[in-house]
Image 1 (cartoon, rainbow, N blue to C red):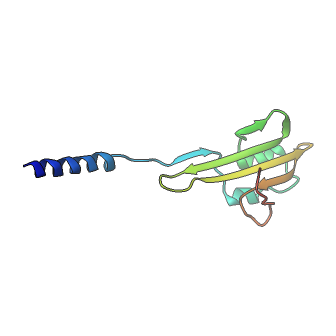
Image 2 (cartoon, rainbow, N blue to C red):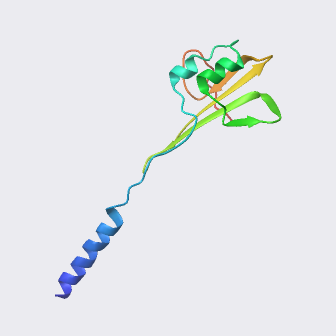
Length: 112
């Protein structure tokens, strides 16, 4: 009887810790694709960048000509995925794109 009670307790503990717990993916920031980044051509306007990438979630009040976009995906039991794009403007036109997303048309240095 005691062995049955111990076995039942262990099984109940396993079900309590393993079953019924669902961990969800956590997605934050601006969702963008390699195709979106490839559309960023030097010389396009801020409005065109806005149409491609949307509202920048990070704006620096001291650097109005710089927009930063960050996307993070956290999945249970996996390494978090992070993508970044920083765009720079001069006179309302795109002059530089920094990103960690590899495309044929953009610089891809690591961001600080």
